[in-house]
Length: 275
Ligand SMILES: [Zn+2]
Ligand SMILES: [Zn+2]
Image (cartoon, rainbow, N blue to C red; front, side):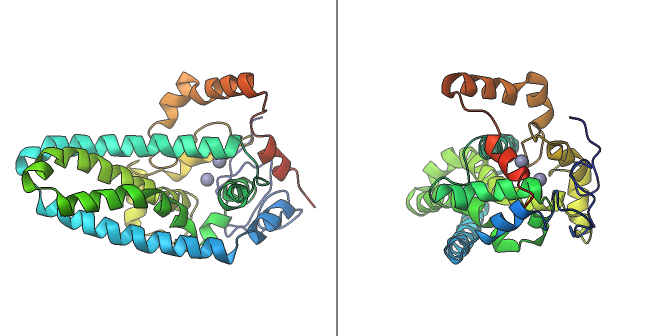
């Protein structure tokens, strides 16, 4: 199922599109795709409210913890801090792959509450990959912010209650956790940037070019139908080793063997919905 990738990161076998995602002819993918339109309509005011609360709480906790990490910094911790940050980023990249793979491959939009709220965006993204570039900051980052609120709140509580000696001992672990939380929180923003071809700030393209965050060209590999590899979307550092290892394929075989469920059946159903 080889297909040539276009500049929006989608397979040419799907559709030719304008840079802003407008579709010229029949809607085989893009904002005019019948499935994409139906999925976009399922974005509700309740969901929007959940995203707003998550973003505000998450960024407040991030700032609070950052201030405390700076206040408790010791030069002797430098190597542990670096190790913690790299470990945190790798863990976030793997977690992004696992969640993305899970939502792309299994489950259905028809599942109560969870389907519409959390599986819908993944289905929409494959048939309208440029929709994410039209989502504002809240819609892009709301769900990931929700994921990190509890660990960040726990860290903030500990900074408030532990003694300076206790914090000194736990400090490298907290650097790991903080880097993990930051990169998990920013994953969808980074993913959005990987689909954005115009107007990106130069520091973002610099980070992409250095492969510190997910590069645009690298993420295109995932957008070749049937979307079965390169699921990691934070830095993408783990995509090549996991692909070499056949990690996702093996995991799918095990799950299919145990449950009888076919991978990506719901995703395929939405992709075929042309009216
Ligand atoms: Zn995907
Ligand atoms: Zn994508």
